[in-house]
Image (cartoon, rainbow, N blue to C red; front, side):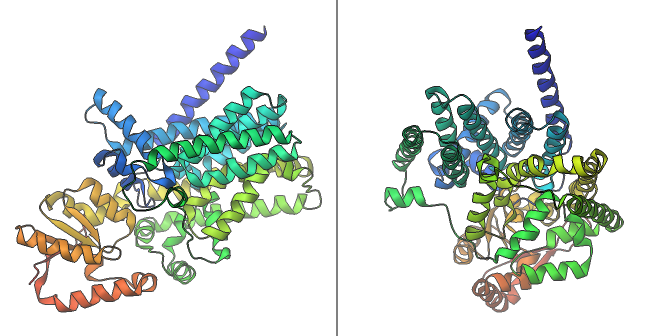
Amino acid sequence: MKSRFFIVNKAAYVTVFFALVLFYLLSFPGNRSENDDGYFYAYAIRSYDYVSILFPRYLLFLPTFKGLLSLVQWLMPSADAYWLMCMVSAIASAISVLLFYFLLKTYFQLSTVLARLCAISFMCSYGYWRYAVEAEVYTVSLLFCLLTVFAACVSVANGFHWKPLMITALLAAISVLWYKPAGVVVFVAVPIYYVLQKIAAVQIAAWSILVVAIVLSVYAVAFQFNETNISFWQYINSGIEQSPGHVLNALPVVGSNVVSLNFIYAFPPVVQLIEQWFPGKQLVEEVYAAKQHESLAILAACTGALFISLALLAFWKIRRSISLHGFLKNPFSLWLVIYTIALLIVDPGSPEPWLMIQPALFAVLGIYLFPLIVKHTSKQLLYALVIVLCLHNFVGGYLFIKNPNDDYTRFQSAWLIDNATENDMVISLGSASAVRYLLYYGQAKVFTGEQQFAQAMLAAKQVHQQGGKIYLTDDFVHPSATVQRRNAAAFSLVKNMLQQQQANIHLLHKQNDTAAAVYQWTPQ
């Protein structure tokens, strides 16, 4: 009877896994302008050799995908690097959701219903849903972090024997090697969890030494291929940079990873407010997509307001009953608190790094607040909260990025992809996602006038001498005030060049419904 139960249970997990993968695959967005790095990663594994993609920030990430791409293209020569990475993200995300549910139910004593509601909320939180179908480092990194937490819970539950010790250390090391900031979770939060669980100091020390030894050994091998003139310690510490920003910037960023804010860009006063709050952020892609759905934005504003109202009602009902007893003995709580502190110091205003707290955030909500909502209000209110969250992120999030015709990067690059050749070059002041999209799908060399102005000017002379054409995007010929606020020096260089070369720049393609304007520059 017991064996039959496990067979049925495994079959249920497998069925749900395939259903989750199908859900994510069916929700692949046509508009991918939200993502900055996906096309660069895909271009890198498609075009560079293994040595060139050994980046210390994510040492194993790109080489692993390059190896996978080689294998898949051996079987299917036409396989696309970008879409392969997106599909792996979807598979990893489906496994993460199932593991998240299993952890909550098995090791944190949540009922089946509450664990399911918590897993659904996590799955459909906008940031996680969006990046579950993107060529990014985060979803696989989160899977490794969840596996490490799972192994740590097994270790504690089973008396921290050597076998789970080795497995946990290996998973922790892989997590760091896949994405270095994950070390905050696996090499800070997990050891503290062990200490608070009164694991013997000798065992914790052995675990820590093992993790450090694995990580340093792999970095030492990678360092042998490093061509820059830096020391090993500089190499291993590279890839982590502090980004300026006020800590209060984290509030809307974290909120938007839970509740989609795509719809707000349809309202000009809100756009102006965001530009004041984040003066260096380009919003042209978000505004372009939102303007196609002005009626839908009103509906999304209603679902968003309804969710916030339900959340405030639930909090008001349970406010006197909230207890954080044992909070810091919970690995998810430690993950949430420590990673939040780290990001507030290093990078409070970027949405993508905050994705790394998503499982921990929803685990804390599920463990400490969901049972109180059921106890002091009703199960129906909790159901309503989860349903409205999913509904809003579908209406106010996914539907705004569903149509490829709403993708500004596609619109901006369309003519250049069709007409620019490998002998030509393009200079743009567009977003990182726009530049990398053009680099991935086009044939021409692509330069950004903001970060590569000197290189672009030198390359332009060479391309002109060799008979190639130099194309300028509309955002380069008409640079935005956002670029000026973010990088005044680059803005000044571009404006001076445009004034000096005005007579040599002419409109080649006038903007229409399918493609943005393109200019041609003939250096003199």
